[in-house]
Length: 505
Image (cartoon, rainbow, N blue to C red; front, side):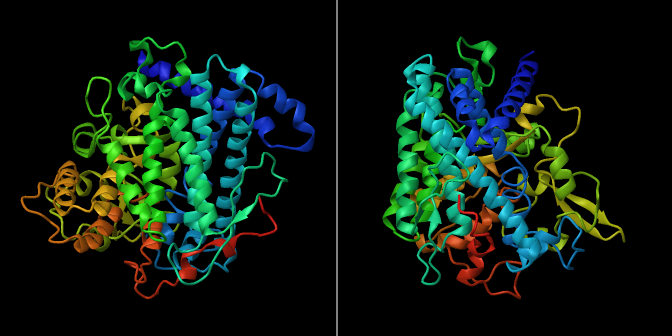
């Protein structure tokens, strides 16, 4: 019964998103409509839901920023030959080669850029009206949660604008000033900031989100599990349930950790902040003294078959058609790979898991279909992260999701940033144990030994989640695995020149 209620709730959110999207395409003559929209609590709910639905659009986290474009930039997919310009993979091929003057590559990047700023403007509208119209909310705690989530949505998108389009943190080459949008209409120009100024805006937004959500977020009174089954708890406002599918307090702490790690390459003082935020999430306890969330690779992948690890997602996007999208892009079960698929070779899979015992690693065992074949019967390998059987139970909760922030990332950040060698080894052992690998000795002999191992883990753990290119960028990696014929320059990591600068959000 619970799952049917959840599906009904998601369907309601979808309807709400459609209704609010009618006006969120902001035009000068919509001021009265906008005012009416934000005159009620329901209007705020609909608008915030519209932001989350937009985040799952295929131009951003529903595909390009998770499965296709960003992974092509990181050289993960096997694309030996240039596809036809009519192929879905033409854009990815030229992004893989970092040929940003190619029309296909530019179109893909422009689509990402435009959609990110579209979402930011939607979040800005929520912020503007929530700050001005407290009377529309049933209480101050509810207003704080809605406002905190809107700030977090803006920061999530603006961080990825920086990671994708901005200069290399700590780099000595090209400098880029980027728009940090606080405007509420698409025809308004946003102020541009240099790296330092932009970083300060990001930090301020997440600080606001954290303070607004602190003690007001329902996660302080309930567990994630309880909020995923609202019929089992007494909660008056069911819109405040399903906190994993929203930027809740602990997701904001995780986003702070990700942000500080990236900024730390430009200013090392931020690395300690990345560590503190990651450890705050790892060590967090609920009202009964139990961990707020734990790693779940073993139980999710091995026991339950939840390949996207939903039970360790601090934040995920609900996307009812994720299997359809992913099946077109990266295959799934028994598919015939071809020019319109993104896949890897058996040799790449072997290299991907080099150095770990594949007889026990649950990612190797459960995350890959090793029997996919080309039209010439050549074996290929496709990822199963977003694949599931049609008859599984609880699809909406455990399968139809896109991971956005996970406990695994918090562990890897803590391992990378801790000043303690013993803690780095202990955390890494805990992390690897959930991958099915029991380490009987320390991996790191010194703190300087961490980078190579962690880079390999970002490849293995977050494949098709869109994080590796940013990891390469912040580490200024020149030789990307599987792109040996290219030597990456700072400009190869900066996609700003792909953007039509006449469009300045």
